[in-house]
Length: 187
Ligand SMILES: N[C@@H](CCC(=O)N[C@@H](CS)C(=O)NCC(=O)O)C(=O)O
Image 1 (spheres, rainbow, N blue to C red):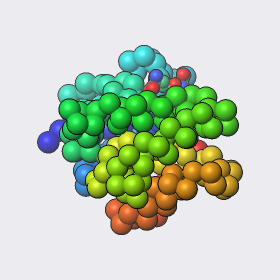
Image 2: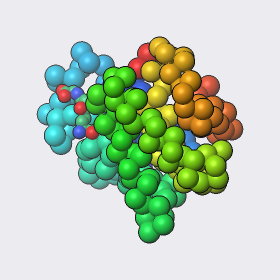
Image 3: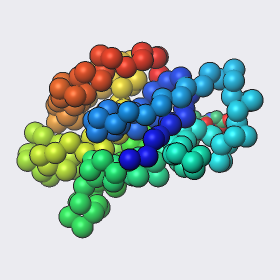
Image 4: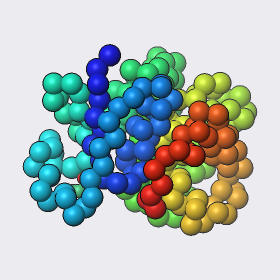
């Protein structure tokens, strides 16, 4: 099994979903965090000059949030079967990534009805996006919503199934232990 170092800033941001995947899989990794004050000095060490970046033994470095997430999800069986579910699952994850970019209520209200309907397509929306197993799209959903939910606790009031998913995720035993033990940062 390779050793991994995950390079990111000292925040949850784009890396938190990856950290959750490592935790769910029970895989130890180096969580290397940079302060913004160090960044000018380090930027040129990374492909594309941004973070996150996943490094493997031997120094190979992979950039791009979604590429890293897909890779880890495949490695740790947190991916849906592409033949059966790829369409819906990838759509969910990409929408979350758009959400990370725009982060505004317009986007939220445009995307959420679709998310609520998609969740309801399996098991009446009472479990996970892809059915009875938690996958990385559920993790991505939670990570993208965390800050917003802290600032706007009523934001899910029109989306009861999404509210249920958010709570179900945070009370999952492994996630619950991760949330309690993780490094607390404001973003
Ligand atoms: N397309 C990249 C964008 C990565 C990105 O914008 N990273 C930000 C932090 S969230 C960054 O490294 N900013 C520092 C810089 O651009 O100098 C991805 O999805 O990973």
